[in-house]
Figure 1 (cartoon, rainbow, N blue to C red):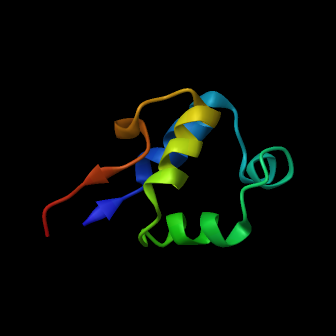
Figure 2 (cartoon, rainbow, N blue to C red):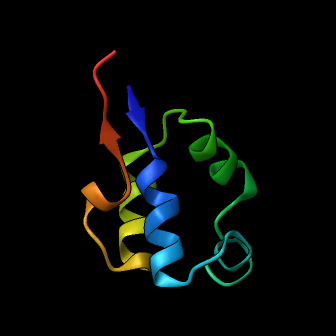
Length: 66
């Protein structure tokens, strides 16, 4: 299972809120909801978050063996 728990930690460290993602970076609320629910998102979405947060993929997501 892919989990995006690290995304929320990285956002907190970088001082980026969900509100900022929506208003300043034009991330759709639906995408944020998908990430909160650990649902699948495209690699493009992951790339956009890496650019916004200036981080690596492993700072956003992690694989956990079921």
